Length: 281
Image (cartoon, rainbow, N blue to C red; front, side, top):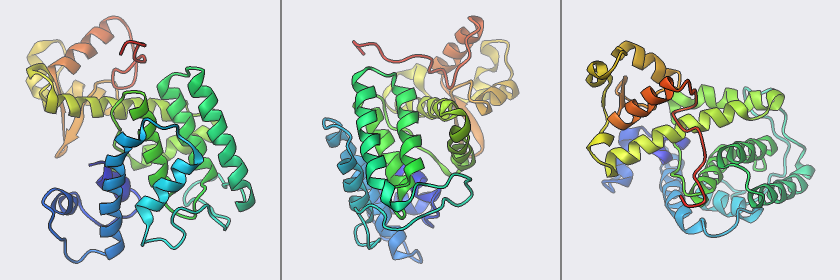
């Protein structure tokens, strides 16, 4: 899902069914551009390799290695900083000139390491790191995919699962990045918390107990004062942790209970993720 989502929001033509066939069934897909197929295969391999990388610090060389691994044989400058000036389609922000890329990326690495060692909370630090990387836009192309790999490497290093940004998320994702130039990355942080709630729900649905099984919202109408319609509204607002499948929201008994308890305490937050793991987590 991660590979399909991160490529699809950048214009890759492979459908979710195509990606499943290619990666899970190991069958070829027809009538799709070769670069789209190749970057799907290579991104999936790089994404899986993030688990190995999480023991090492995140540095500028990490970004270069990820870019080369995803785009080798596709882009002539794979693994190289851009040597041209670029603009980001649909965004007011203009990335720094090409001669400023290397010093800006060195500053990014130094600031991230300093804040990480100082114990900055995981979500604010991740939002800042991702926003700064995308603002520099250090590659001629492929910045979004490498930036999201770096973001997920950050989460994995801090014992959180990766998040998946899918086509329906694209507009809000870009708005949060654009808004960060004027108001800071708070909106991006809130968005990442919602995505993490979705990732945790999906993970627990696969590995958790019966309480973690995802069910349609109608299954929870008799468990409190909330109708399925109201729960769908709260899910759409990012307040109730839920996953949308085939147009319908689904959540778990655990997530529903946590939401009710949070509302009872007057707590508001993104996808029910209000704090950070303790040192013992």
